[in-house]
Image 1 (cartoon, rainbow, N blue to C red):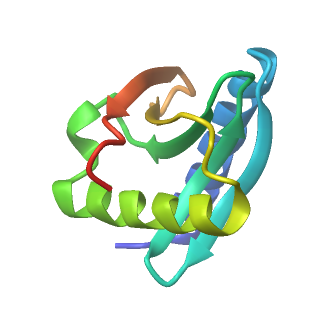
Image 2 (tube, rainbow, N blue to C red):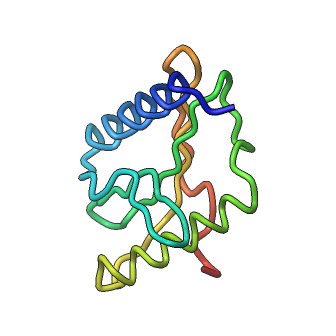
Length: 117
């Protein structure tokens, strides 16, 4: 069930993840970027690559929190983003940012391969 509290938890988790990427030298290119294929929680510009970050706020860190269907939508949205917003020359990756109920962040880099999109 979707509630205002869940929405606020999600926003707080995205802000925590964004702060983490900024501290690591990343520039946030987009937050909650939407297109017909889906939504990208965050797009980060690192010196060597573009990172598409899926953020999940859950009671516990669960790398399985993103289903195959969700990954497919994220991949399709990332493909659209690359076509519309970049020249397509830079490497990309998908990261998963997990935030638990205590506000602890776990970043899983390369959580999903970009090949095949």
